[in-house]
Image (cartoon, rainbow, N blue to C red; front, side, top):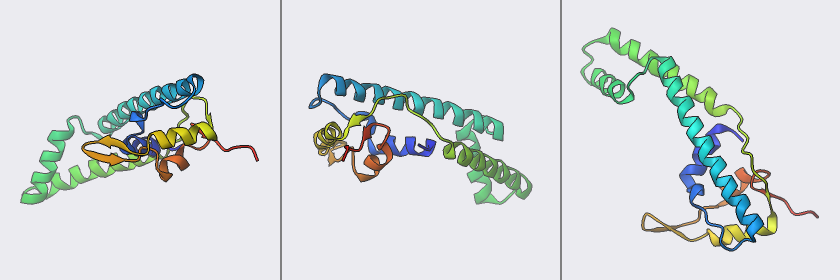
Length: 152
């Protein structure tokens, strides 16, 4: 899967899935998957931090503050152009990084167990709302990673 997919999985709350309805062996596969997902996200965050520095952004908050100030005031066009170039470089580097493939070291569930997992996680309470942690996008992204199609 692409590294960008890791962020999407995190946004859907996949790291919060529970596995109470699965057999112990399959429940453990979900535990291992969650650990792998968290580790991959942490590694991606470190890679992005290194890219920021490579692009010339030491302090992201200070960089954003200065850039926004320059955009508003237009008082120093040369510095604004320089900062925009740094930002563009970071965006390009980040796009390359997010397009890279990543493999999670986990074993896939049979589809029957995946379906149980989906049902269990279809109406989870998050931030005062009921959400489906394993909707169609997540199912598609995790095919062959966390689950495999049934044999026909």
